[in-house]
Structure formats: structure tokens, C-alpha cells
Length: 83
Image 1 (cartoon, rainbow, N blue to C red):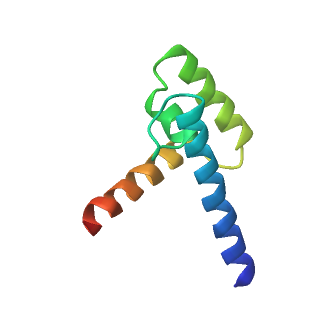
Image 2: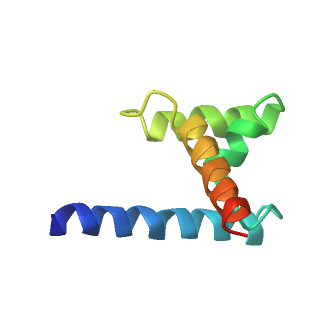
């Protein structure tokens, strides 16, 4: 159980870092990960390359960028529902 909690926390830290990179380096929205943005913008040439590269890095996931995009949307919906 403690191992699962640690993995969950590491996942949250990674998402936070990705959101930070999206804002600071790419001028994106603070509540969107780089992978989620790559999925959303995948029809544009540069983002298509990022989409393909990120999915290659996370090869064990069927479509990492799509999963990240959906997680970003779920988080946004949770915030809307909470307020």
C-alpha cells in the first residue's frame, strides 16, 4: 500500500513538473501537461512530432498523450464540480 501511495505521489510530481514546463518554456496553460497539450495540438507539425516523441518515450502506454489529455480534462471537471 505504501508503495502504491509513493508511485501516486511521484506521478503527481511529474504532472506538476510537466505543467510548469508547459507554462514557463512553452507559454501554455498552467493546468495542462505537455503531453496533454501535444495530444490536443497534434495536427500541427511541431506538436505532431512532440506527440510522437512523447508516445515513444512512454512506449508501455498505448497512447500516453491521449491519456494525459483525458487526465487534464478530468482534473478540470473535478474543479468545476467542486465549485
